[in-house]
Length: 94
Image 1 (cartoon, rainbow, N blue to C red):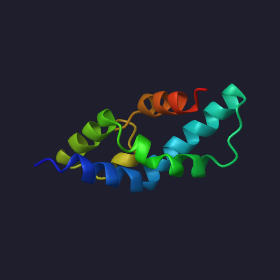
Image 2: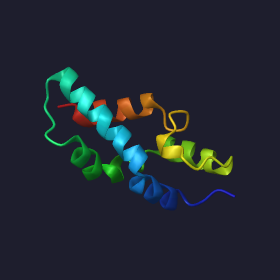
Image 3: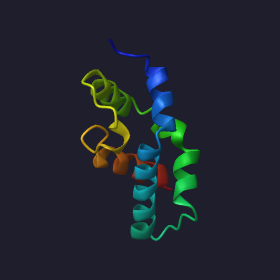
Image 4: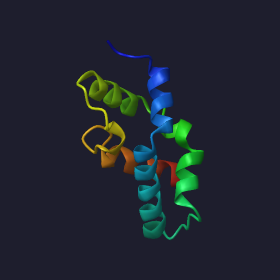
C-alpha cells in the first residue's frame, strides 16, 4: 500500500543521506560554475522542502518503499544522481 505523498515528502526532507547527496551536488556545481556556496549542507537543508516535494523523487521513493528498500536516500538507483543534479542546477540558476 502506497503512503501519502505528503508523508513521503516529509520523510524525504528528513533523510540525512538524501540531504547530503544534494549538498555534495551543490558543492560540486558551485565549484564548476564558480558560484561559491559557503555551507552546502545548510544550502541543502534550507531547500529540503523544495527538493523533498519533487514529484518524480516522491514517486521513486514510494516505489522503493513498496519493494522493501529502506535506505532509499543513499541509494542512487532510487533518487538518481541525475535527479539531484537537475534540481541543483535549476536551483542555482540565476
